[in-house]
Image (cartoon, rainbow, N blue to C red; front, side):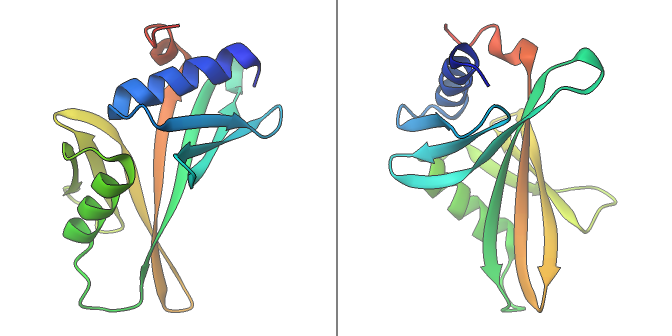
Length: 139
């Protein structure tokens, strides 16, 4: 990731989530960390398949092992708090029980995939970013 891409990704995420405190910090040629303030949200990676450059933000959200935990309200509250945006909403997917969808208003953002390891549940938020998304990022 070059400096120009990092700036565009930073501007894109700030605009997307409506949060000026989001920061993209380069880690290597292929990845960067995403922060809100000092809080590390996840990792951005580059995907250069077939000549199309894209990016993926991956966040791991631990929800514990309590079977009574309701994922939609729990994840709604978590994501709204993390991004300081009350317009984020998590919805169930028709015909899928292993994942949920994330929106801001009516705009689809990405998917939350359920992962269970040693009885502990977590969700992996995958937010794809295409290079064309960065064209209107303000930089």
